[in-house]
Length: 151
Image (cartoon, rainbow, N blue to C red; front, side, top):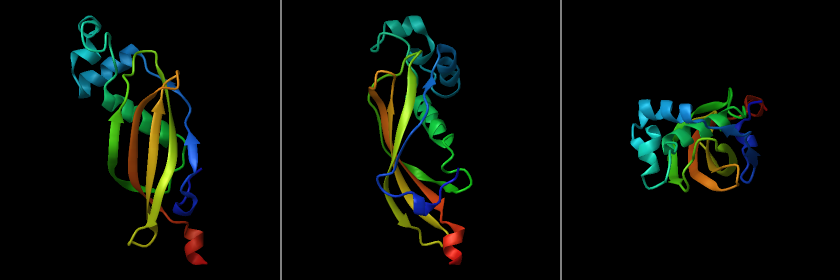
């Protein structure tokens, strides 16, 4: 169910369903977007700083964003992204880890262009052990409620 700007009140939170990352998916993403041994070659990764294969941080970010979008809050009301701030990879994500994201409205303000507002969301991504693996802030534009504009 899409939400409008007025419903993105600071402090509102969502928790996404979980998603497990498998070795083949980690390798497939890395082969296309982050071709480093620590994401592609299990034997080389075992000798590396993490002691084994890990997912690209960009893969973790993409998965967390997809989990948030599938919640449906922006479906039909999203008006585009402005950027990401404070992206931090806290711990490596390994094959078999299950990720879920907690998303919180941090700020909102009306945009000078009528019909939309700016929303800042805080994303905290955790694995199945409740360890924070990634955190970031997303800045986006969300449509205002057309019914509110008519009244």
